[in-house]
Length: 226
Image (cartoon, rainbow, N blue to C red; front, side, top):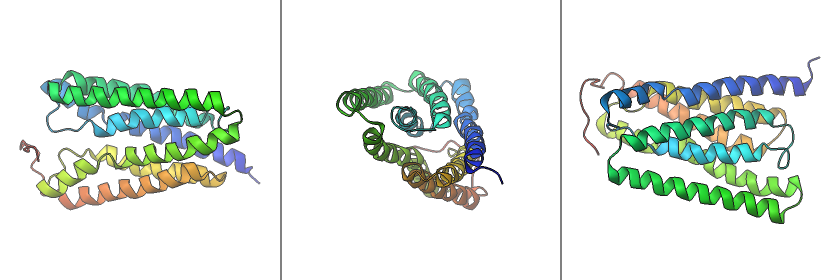
């Protein structure tokens, strides 16, 4: 009989692959931004939210916070640096008002992360204690990452167009939520189950919207800001 730990490792590897695809899925969006030298109507919200989410999960997966979560660290470490790159591209091709917003949010995230790490490592001396604090924080930011596309979903409903809601990103969000929920169920970890099950629902909602409004999308039309 296959050892549950082995199954969990396999699922975690699959989760890394799917998460890798999730992180890479916006590439067509950024190619479009680079070619047009403009962010057009694309939103930076998902990428800014994902920076802090990846940073917190990388911290959560460290052995001084939780055990046997190396796969959580590897994929979130990769995601952190890639999302930084995406956000930099947004910053370069945005107007000054949008640049200021991006910069302020990013600086706020850095300060928050530094405070969490310093305070927990200084005043809490066991992994169990740190996990109880870091886990709920990770839940909050993971949910924010999954629901950052809400602004885009609202635009889809208003304009009846999915032009600015990339299908690959929506599908990757759905698959990512499913596989990491499975990973956490194999060795019960509510801090991973809760946000990723919600993420699966969020991804599914985006896919439903994509199916509903795909035929009404004019791919050549420039959609006004709403």
